Image 1 (cartoon, helix red, strand yellow):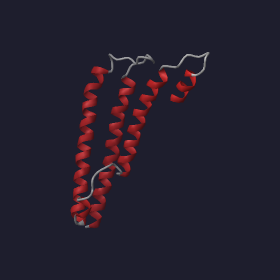
Image 2: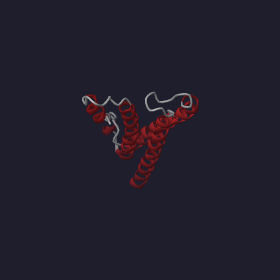
Image 3: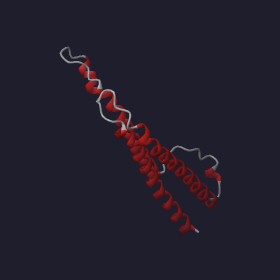
Image 4: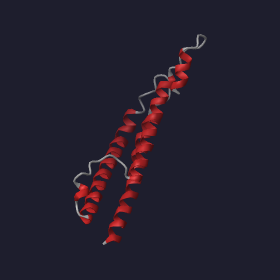
Length: 135
């Protein structure tokens, strides 16, 4: 999309396309949530594990499960807040250059947090199974 805007800037017979930047922004936000969901599935998020890796194996598993529960609680809370704000804000706002309701781009935040929570529930179930099988 951005490449299209750059090309049309330098063509003398075409005007620059204003909607490409806005559409790219919305697509980038949606892609970031898909990537975050994939990161949750692999549990490859960024965290400091300097102290956690030095714990005994059982304490390490318990600590990781607690961290996953805290992250899941935070994600569910974000989804809850987004669902509360979604109908209040999105109905009144319209995309400046593309002219559609901002309910569509704002829904990517809700969908993304729900995907992240679902992936994290799967990781948590795997962690609990692994912890129970090791004992």
